[in-house]
Picture 1: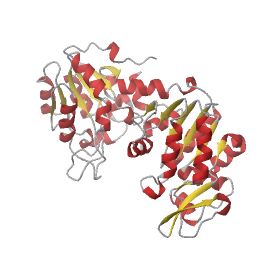
Picture 2: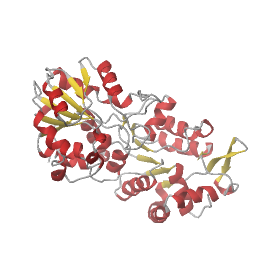
Picture 3: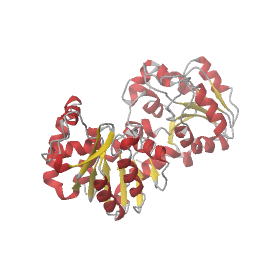
Picture 4: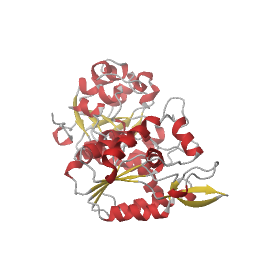
Length: 398
């Protein structure tokens, strides 16, 4: 079933609830440290406001109990600066104050409602019918004429503000959501050969991406980086050292080694593993050939080595589509940034490059790189799409 977009929404003077994902890094005073996610939604919000809609913006910030679990007042101030329309802030989400704030809007005005996760049920997952019965959805929906979901980055979650409103209101995909689905949902239509670069912190998901791509003929080559590379090296019989092995076992990744063994057996010619790695030795970067592993007992594999980056870069130079999912190592530490920086620079030489969001996008911003065709706004959601799994909020829009 097709998903309706803003092209199908009669927006003039309509009260439109727009779920966005502006969950952002915060400074110590709870001000925004990075507004990239807010800027991503400017096109959707501007289009609705230009058309005369009265826009109620719903969003979350942080996790309950976390350091970045905060109010959205600073987000409202920044949206007011980014948009050519007035954006107010309301410190309520679905109460009478929130509904009154929506009713008070004139055409072309917006209000950002308070952090949806201040409401306990929002941090739970429900099927859409049950989500529609929650206080947030049942109390707020009468104040709205339509609902737009532009929060692709949260669309793998089945929370009330993401799946409940489509049960009660005409619902549409915003421009961010539309673009993400168009790109990530049509990998098989991109130029070949395709190369997947898999790494990052979400190891089970990254291994699942590699498995899905190889088993379904989406990838000609998979380049292994980060902890994922350690998983595959261990599956190939390499001793990656005490500390790296402990990390694998402490995080419960033993099952991923079994999956990697099966993939190496069935698709070994398509999977490239590092030929050298970097460790910290006496406070300096030290590169070791894989043939010389394990490293010292107190050393962990922290990055790809330069020979591996060069070999991977040669593959990417001949690639039709490069899909980047996860950094090559601990890129936050300048000692171990070379692998990620070199790999991502090489990926821009592919004919078409897709970036899977999350830490991958953060690394690209850190290094000031450009030349990528699509940078996803979502880490977990992008991973879910790349593994062929449905997204709860997208299914709700259908």
